[in-house]
Image (cartoon, rainbow, N blue to C red; front, side):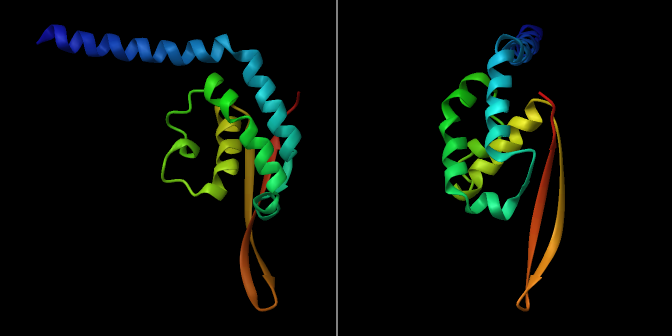
Length: 129
């Protein structure tokens, strides 16, 4: 019984080391991907404008293979089968920014136009190269 629990503990330690190793081994590549994402979305953007810009979506999705290679994406919502296709690019952006420990602030407000109310989210990324 003791051997099984020790093996489980050892497996957890190995998994944690692999995550750290990925962060350390691919530091330059991860920063490069972050820079590319910032170049696409900017440091300040509105969710509504980003959702409608298919060119930006495609540029983010072009980074998909590199993101999978250099980041631990197993727990990211963007790579879960339940995510809506249109929300995947913004989810990738937010996940990379969070994983790289870059501060991102959001502010949601209500926009009223022609007797209709919609919510709009503004994202501000605090990032210096």
